[in-house]
Length: 157
Image: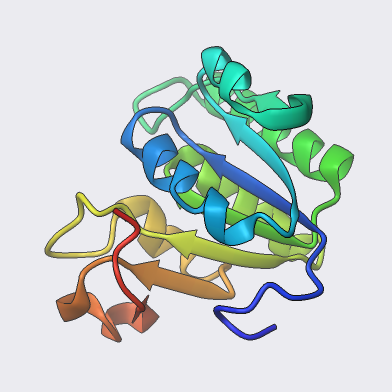
């Protein structure tokens, strides 16, 4: 699959944390209108913004939470991936995006990580961890292009 060509891709899972991660992810939707889109996030209210009810709620968790809460989030992401069975997973982070990229690669899916525009000077912590598992890691800052294997094609915002 060409890095910017989604011809032939039928099913895409877009997954992220809430807030800015979700806003950035949502801005990709017009470029993917030929695909069957499924969404997952940590805010239940986002379901109202998603067409066709293709939304999956993922419990919020971060590195400061208990291992049980983080494991539950990881399991929810894995179950979502199995249910949706996408060809491609696209994420803007953070924790649910990392788990999605990690499990999707194990399931033989294509994965794209778009690092947060808020990370001006370096790739995010989640992005750096996802790098080992993502087929493509995009940065929204030109000066980070090629650092740690990231690529720059322009800003999402």
